[in-house]
Image: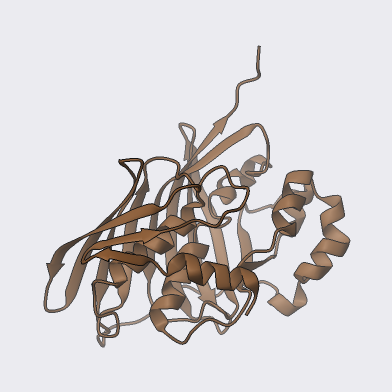
Length: 290
């Protein structure tokens, strides 16, 4: 198991302080604020700790990012057990730092039931082994990329990324504005299904908001862009392994009012749709200093 995955699992392993109260920490890296996916993943862990996820796994969460998280201090997660019904359970989780709520989410749990089934078609894109590996990207492609992109891809990360349209980081346009990236944990994860869902929740905040800039030929690495996640919605359709390749297919129907809206489908390599994601985020152009 890679050191980055070990650290991610440690970050997701919250300390229980009371029946409905948990404490999480952040990696002590050079981040100025807590990565949004970390808070989503930790909040989902806190909610899962109050439900029998073997019988009723999480099927959806709806979250708001309220304040930037401080990576230097712990995050307290307070779980409100709103309802335990016959088929569904509902939890509300508030993340607190410095006496203020920085994040809130509602999580719904539902046991598997038989029913109708259909799904979106798998996009026709190259498989991961047909794309440059991370080592090849470092050797052949990173030297051509802007410095902020290079720094991002040079970091050791718990989630491996293999972008299909990686040429957009070289300034080349993407005709239909869609973006596809293969993702997986960089090491084997425990067998517990809830761990895979929490890692997937963590990864679901990666690269998504950036797709709202594709039609404009920009990226979140542009120093003239101020970006921040505002809300996040995630639906788990089918179980999957987060340590096996998953295609994250993005599009952005609309940016307006300095906010970008992006959607994503997460699809297993065999074509099984496992999750859907939607997010709105701040995309504000910085004003030139006078």
